[in-house]
Image (cartoon, rainbow, N blue to C red; front, side, top):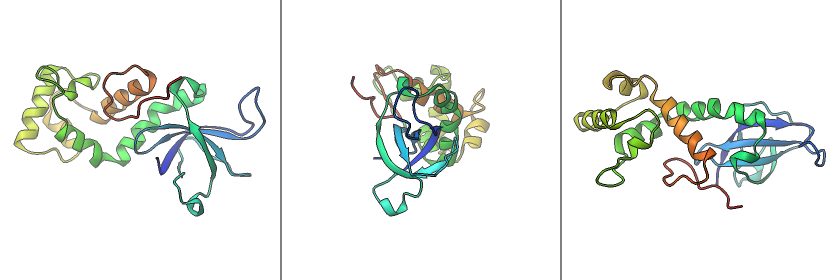
Length: 183
């Protein structure tokens, strides 16, 4: 269960062809769960806004109900467009968690490492990251960029991986997201 979500889209008049109740699409801060939300009456939400959706109803100032999980293809076009920017914001706001990923992610098998699942990281860069983290743990994204050649925005690479996991329900390995709903 997610406690906080970032708003991807807010449809004040609801989905076309459905009842005219406001809905919002959001992405969870912890497991990148895609959710459909029912805002409270007379509440406006903005894209990229962080809102509480946890179990404590007294802390829910903007969301009346979490309608449920949705898959990527059920999101609105605007939500698709906003997704990668919101993911990058979540990653930057939780930098320590994702730097820890670079410091601790393991090999998947004797021939394949979890780092190789990150778009843009090949074997050469993966070996460079593993060698550098053996010498000393990375402290920040800037530290990673400074110590690894040709790796200028490690947070954007993770964001692309998260987006791939959300878009492709058949992903064999999930590093950051929950498995999608079965249809």
